[in-house]
Image 1 (cartoon, rainbow, N blue to C red):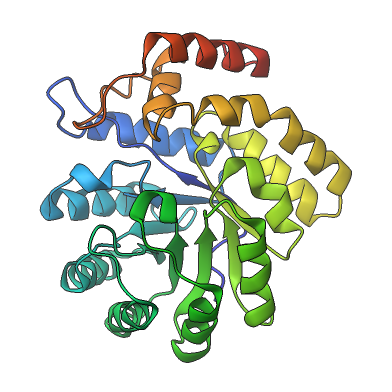
Image 2: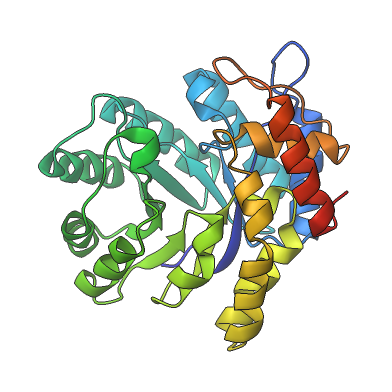
Length: 294
């Protein structure tokens, strides 16, 4: 039930000056990603500023992406929430609108026990009939899903097919693959750890870097999966300065700044996120220039 292999972009949500979603610009970004070789669109994730969207807006942006992409590549909808009821509602709407899969972040703020996570994900996934990818990013949510919990869910909930592993701890990815007997689609959630997770049996990345370098990230993963590990590793290492710069402040502050520097006009960020600080702009500009983006 793999949703995709390769490079999926955690796409930004472009805004107008009044902070309304810029759908015309979103359409342009989607077309550029498809033309650049991106293997899947992940809409309304962390990078897409989903936390500052209303539920109605959240569903509208997902619906727009599904309709615009029109089955050319998979569209995965970020429908996680710290409220199980809200996550079910968003997930059912995304499934009805034709999403190819769901990305379900662990519940933030109120957190959950591991038994609570099992109940949360089981309820959501039993309410839809499309595949789901778990999303482990404890630095953002304060709530980590343990490898044993992942294994339990994969073995007991048919449509949980993958995990976006963004803990930053390679050992977590290894334990997940061991306990799941490899029967899970492992995606790197960190652009600086794509090749290491591929080496553990991963099949791709859900990438911030793909916003500014879609062909590069696609090629890096493709090289690895086709057996060119040395070439893929070189691409990973060459991209490290840019990866670091894209996370010099909390995501998606730097990547939106980068896209604006490239003339993409993706607009401002919604509060409480603020524009990239001046000293970091210089750092980002230098990294982008060195990478050939400016």
